Structures are given as C-alpha cells and as structure tokens.
Image (cartoon, rainbow, N blue to C red; front, side, top):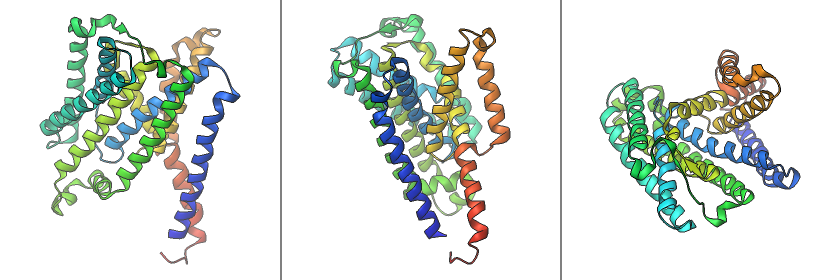
Length: 331
C-alpha cells in the first residue's frame, strides 16, 4: 500500500508540474487581457481558499468572518501605497503590516473563542468582520469611507503579465509552504483535533495552542491574498470585508474538496470560470444576468453529488479500485 501511495504521489506531482508549465506558457498562447486578469484572480482566490481550508479542513474550525483577514491585508497594502511612494518597498511594507495585524487579530479572536465550541468562534469572527466593515466605512480620514479610493501600484506590478507571474509564483510557493505545514507534526495534531478534540486533549496536547497556530497561519495567508487582490483592482472599498468573500472561500473549498489544499485551487478555478462565463452569457441571454442563482445551484449539485468535493471524490474512487486488487500486499 505504501508503494501504491508513493506511485500516486509521483503521478500527482508530475500532473501538477505539467499544469504549472502550462500556466507559465499560457500568456504566450492566449494574449487575451480579460483571460489574463481572470487567471490572476483565480490564483489569488485559490490562496485565500487554501487559508480557509487550513481552518475548516485541517482543524475543523468554522469561520464566518475569514474575510476580515482578507480585508485587513487589502487595506494595509492600499493605505500604505496611497500615503507613500508607489514602490515595491512600500508594497512589501503594506504586506508586512497586514500580516502583523492578522496575527494580532487572529490571536485575540482565538483567545476569546477557541476555548469554547466551534460555533462561538464562527459567530465571533463574523462579528469582528462586521466591526472592521463599519470601521472601513466610518473612518473616512483613513479609508475614504464607503466610496473607497484608488491608488497607484508599483511600476513593477503595473504590467498585467508581470503581475500574472507574481500571483502564480505566490500560489505555488504558498501551496508548498502550507503542504509542509500540514504534513508536519503540528499539522498531524491539527488533523487529530478535527477528528476527535477530546481524545487529543486527553493525550496531553494543548488544543488551544494548536488551534491558535492554525488560526494565525490562516489569517496571515488570507491577508496576503487580500494585498494581491487590491493590486489587481488598484482600488479598495469596504466590500473586501463583506461576508460574500467568506462564502466564496467556503464554496471553493467545498467544491474542490475539504482538507486537501489542492481542492481549493480547483474550486477557485471552477467558481471563477463559472462566474465569468455566466456573466458573459448574461449580456446576450437575460436569464443569466442572475448568475448568482446558477452559482447556488452549482453548489447544491456538487454537495449532493460530490459531498467530498472534486479531489475527495477522485481519491476515494481511486482507493476503491486499488484496494480489492491488492489485498495481499503488505501494509
């Protein structure tokens, strides 16, 4: 069985490598500006969805306010660039500020609620997200209120092709880092917590400590995705704190497969392509103007037909085919 798993891992590795090569070559095959922007958004939301999967899939924590970290990263980068020079140095400073704020907020929220049952954390994060939304609307001297503001991006990132590769490289690196994190000893404890928290606590592990680590890692990654997101728009407003952002991450994670990391990436691609093509159809066929209804229908179909998501379903079916033929193999 171990031999079979290693072969599967090699196969997945080569498939992933081919996909990365294909994405690197894509701008030279298709020079459409709209497709370049679409793929860039897929990469960014895939990073955000992976951060959500760290909470939901690997730790069993439900968060309705994960968008607040996305918004923190977005406003940190936008305000830093708007009040200073539009240089890479200040952009990186904005990312750093967003990461520090994400650590502080995730720690405070975690300490307040992670000792309790999971639904308390879900509701508290939602409350904090609404609080940040109100701050973004009312603190006009800093955020320009509900209208938001535009800002200049660093020259290096102003070219859409360059930013496409920045987003792609960011996705690959963050995936690798999160994969190392989830396969580490800490990640194994998080998996155990998601399955049976009481047993893990009985074994002597400090469950709160590990939950805080998970919350902080997820918050920092989400803040980074928010910083990349506002660079694509070159504009920020309080909508980055809306619950729809969290629901998008939930949808992407559920469609792709919870607790897989690669699943949220596939889910992000599915949702973004679906939104794009339905909105395009809406220009000629009026019924598709309400594309959000069809997105909800897609979610229902996936949950009923593929409860484990795309990746989870593929893995389970692959294991079913392999197991009967190899009953005599040493475990």
